[in-house]
Image 1 (cartoon, rainbow, N blue to C red):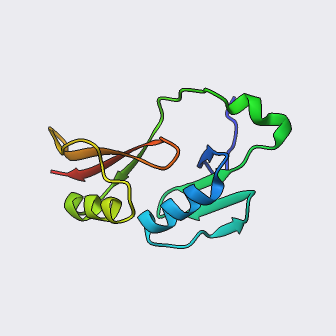
Image 2: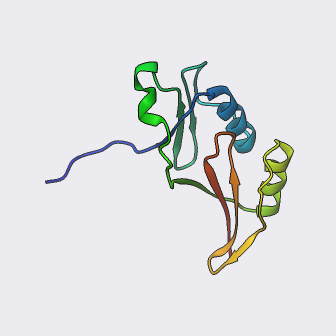
Image 3: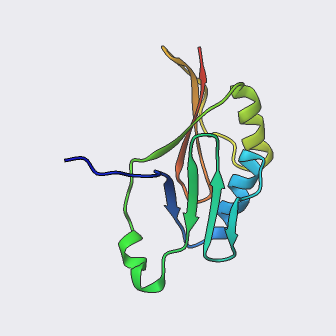
Length: 122
């Protein structure tokens, strides 16, 4: 039996929705497509919707200490320009560029500590 779905997107829970909204606005160089101050932000990207939401007080405990291994992977045309953008907005990657068989990549973090993997294909 198959179930039908219409869309899939990634969402981050946060206590500081404005910090993540500002960070991703600067990183993605676009304003949110949906913006409800202090409640919800959504960016429509080429092949992904990124949602950022503040959990309701009665649901807050569900999001404490999740320790997710999830990363937001962003394929870029030029990794050096991506690093410069992150540095300019105050979140420089803490490590060095990794040379992998599939190209170059570097890890960075948003204001909430969510890991970003910036990748430039070989």
